[in-house]
Structures are given as structure tokens and as C-alpha cells.
Image 1: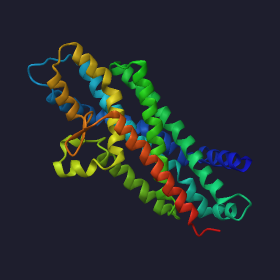
Image 2: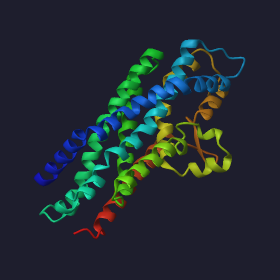
Image 3: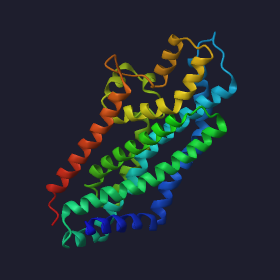
Image 4: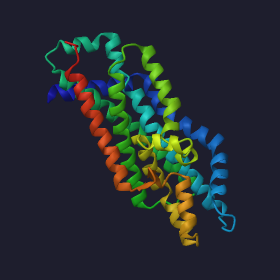
Length: 297
């Protein structure tokens, strides 16, 4: 086990030593929060207000709390995956520098090397995503706090699982990359497109029915819904306590993807967790298979 722990320590230290890669990963969630709050808060506010029936009234504080909860859920849903692709670039950089070849001809087993890359990338990404979670909670506290201790704990669990999903996915993709250009291209594509296909930027419910059915096969859709459910649960509970009828609450939950449907059938939170955990397991198996059949010596 000593070679494994040594490699994990080496990979983690190299990530934090690379100031460019580390600060890019760290400031990405903060930049997203600033951009969301500056440019999307008004859009989200109007969208949320339009989803509320005209005969129902909602005060400004509750509306601000709902909008900020939607903002932070979108940010966390995107950051857990995009940061993972950035932190996992060490795998590519080792190929470019020749360090990967040196490690492959050393007494270290290939399986140990692969596991060390995954674990160190997970640790690095978790540090950043949980820092982002802390910043998001402070932002929510300023805008309107409706969280319980359980909500915060469930959000932490969601961030942990989605981070593992992001690391597992990036491990499979980055395994085939061998240049900085390829790494940058993949990172750009993921950063630009993932937020749309997972429903973070725009709710899946606002898409065409055919596209909704396609996106219902993607695990990221369910991960985003889990984070949004737990971020907005307190807001919804407050709405119910002031007299919002069940039918109106269902419409609001549907509009913001807190209720998801797989071919018209409602998906429970338990099923969403099953999809997310199953996807992590499947991606890990694929990563293992890639390493088993790799031609690297």
C-alpha cells in the first residue's frame, strides 16, 4: 500500500503546486457564482415569479431565497463535473512530460497507478467543490436562509457523489488524451455544454418533449435534480406553510425540475440516487477496463 499512498500524495501535491491549474479550478465556482448572481439572478427571479399563480402572493425575502437556492444548485451541479475535468489533467500532463512512462516501467503496478490518479483527483476536486459549497451557503445566508441541518447534510452528500461522478467520467475521457491542446479542448466543451444537458442553466421542463426524453437518460440530469431538491426544500416548505395549494406546488416543482419524469413516470429521489451511484460504478468499471487493456508498458 505504500506505493499507492506515495503516488496519491505525489499527485495531490503536484496539483496544488501547479498554481495555474489549482487557481483555475478554485476560482471557477466563484466566477460562476458572480456571473450567475449578476446576469442570471434577474432571469431566475422572473422565471420563478411567472411560475407562481397570480392569485398567490409571495414576499420579497422568500422570492430572493428561492432564486438564490436555484442559483447555488445550478452552480454546484456544474462545478462538481467541470472542476473534476480540470483537476484530472495531471493524468495528461504526466504523459506529456514523460513521467507516466517512467512510472509504468517502475515496480509500481499499473492498477496502483490508475487507482492513485483517481483517488488524488477525487481528493483535489472534493476540496474545491466543498469550498464552493461553503461559499454558496454563505451567499444563501445573505439572500434568505431556509435550510435545515438535514438539507445541508443532503447537499453535502449530493456534492460528494456528483464529484465522484465527475472524476470517474473525466478519468475515462482523459485516459485517451495526450496533449495540452486535447485537454483544453475537452475542458472547454465540458464547461460550455454540460450545464445545458444536465438542466443547470435551463430547466429540462422548458425543453421540447423529445429532448426531455433524451436527457432523461443522462445521469447528470438526476444529479442536478437532487441538488435542486435539497437546495429548495426549505423554500417549498415555507410556501406550503403560508398556504400554497398542493396543485400550485406541484407545478412549481415541475417547472424547476424538482420533479423529474422518465417517459411520463415520476422518478423518486431514491431512484435518482440509484442512477447516480450506478453511473459512478459503471464509469469506474470502464476506467478499470481501459487500464487493463492499455498497451502502455
